[in-house]
Amino acid sequence: MEKLTVEQLKTLNEFEGRPVLLVAKVGSVNYNLHDETSDQDFKVYVLPSFDDLYTGKRFVKSVVSDEVDYTVHDVRDLAHQLKKSNVNFVEVLFSTDLTVHEDSLHELVSMREEVARMNLPYFYDACFGMLYNKLKVFEKGTGSSNRFVEQYGYDTKAFMSMYRMMDFLLRYEANEFTSFAEAFCYTEEEREFMLSMKHGRYSKEEATVLVQEMREKVESKKPVYRSHAYQQETETKMESLLKKLVHEKVMK
Image (spheres, one colour):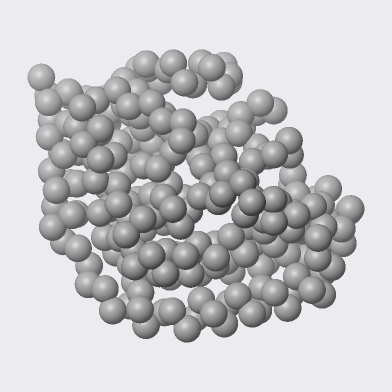
């Protein structure tokens, strides 16, 4: 199959014989930190085929192109991804560019704040895991971020991402986990400050100190995140919605 354009993705009804249920733009645009250097990334969720169900296959495919990168997932994996509280998947429900083809998924989107705080202890750990991954490339960069290393002496894109992730954890705790959306997205004034990090506002040494200071603040909030019990009721409702959707569409 040939690589799709952004417009083709937004109007996509089928992918390799599987009906498309949801298309979400992910990444910097959702937290109002996109600029001319930003990539375009999408996540797509599809129904499993009968053969997928029969063989136990979970379809997944990643495509990288000059215009847009996208990953296609079996919708059955969505519940698992959300239960694991990986912010990159929770973000799907908060996308500013979201196409939903089924009413039951609209219902899932409507309960997105509940889903976001379903597993706060794991959510905290998942965010820290992402922080550690960014620390690994802070000095040397990776792939498309090499140009920042060449220009500023370190990966300023990774620096902004680390700061944003830690800032998000602080903002989310500050609003008592009532609004993932507000904690996640920056105002125009905040956007200017955040993007200045990406474009060399701080020296490598200053950035290192700032990351450590933010890290200490975030680590002080760990007990707060850990104090919240897992929300089994939310998981059950979410699983029920997706199970019913797959049953009705595939087994009809």
